[in-house]
Image (cartoon, each protein chain N blue to C red):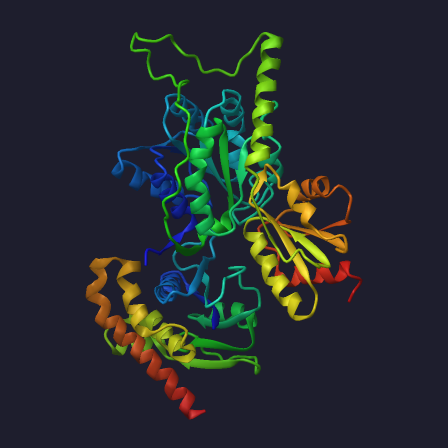
Length: 352
Length: 185
């Protein structure tokens, strides 16, 4: 048996190392401190670089530099720290560079709390920085899935030259589960013919930049990005569905919250109430097409989040008004409960 | 078969450690496991607890909310906090060395283990947590003692193998103490 019991924060590091990540820049913040701790030990053992930056802003700009030189690079933080990184992420997306970013979300706004949260959905999916950019967002629900997605994230980032955000929360970071590090199917990647690793006097200099002073040039760049985003939307959507057929209510939940919902669904089924679930694995691109699988007889949708309701916007967009969309959530570091989900479902069904 | 157990005490009593051992042992037996620690600005001497689930089925939420099948409480604040978190019919395993109080509910099974004294008697007061774990696995049968012992060096490192014998004694003593209690009932 090749399974090991690991904390989410440590497992995500191990996955990154195994995917060839050799540069990590970060700054401590709870609840993801085991990430820099683990990286500080394991990176040097693997011939890589671990560097604790003087701030999150510095760390993300170190990422910008290191990916520009062709490295496989990761940084991590938690909510308030992620806010600080947004400028750098916009620059990296603007310069079309690949990197992997981990956010173990905590309560907000501001410094919020150190307990788990999912209130960075808007920041993660709407572009927390300036400008017309997107980046891929993976939302794993188990440590095994986080490991698998993180290993793939580096390839996907390279393939599209785009940042990939692995979005967890304090719970998945702190908890331990059994994981197995499986080798992933390598995908064919284009040559990195854009990196600035020195001309060695045999080629023209390359420039990595996100500044386009000529409006026509910037517009052309925006159109190119838009085309890339459309390609990603057509190819990289991931989701899981369960029990949609004949479901009276369909829940939509991602990450750890989806596990709470699954408990509630099991309990409701025992009471004779059929509830299905759509679990987005990519938050961007959002799995709009999953909603086409919902049956016409379904009465309503219920979005469950560890926030005051953010993904609900995407659920409304994706479901195109075909069903009423309800919300149940908790925030502030509190976790939605199966009982809360059950009560919401019953309320929707008219107190049955 | 599923056990959802809260392990609680003060920092330094090894509550996180026995939670990890239990989860690791479950994994070695090819069961699904999760271990979720409380985390916060606490430090040594503060409260510590973790939720451990060992199950034959896929594990949903790793958070236990009043649906624990058992709680192992090592000190009084933990008992006060977590007695209500045990589901009806569940088990409350109480470290009576430090808790001079009886369970207040009659819809759960309460077991009283003099864990600190027992650990002291076998040679190391620090093994009180293992005494409690021994009682828990004897009561529930959720994992084998051998799996806990196999997990021991995986969790704490090969250099701790020298403590295996003592810890096995502690598990046995905890098991004995709880089984005696059942036979008395």
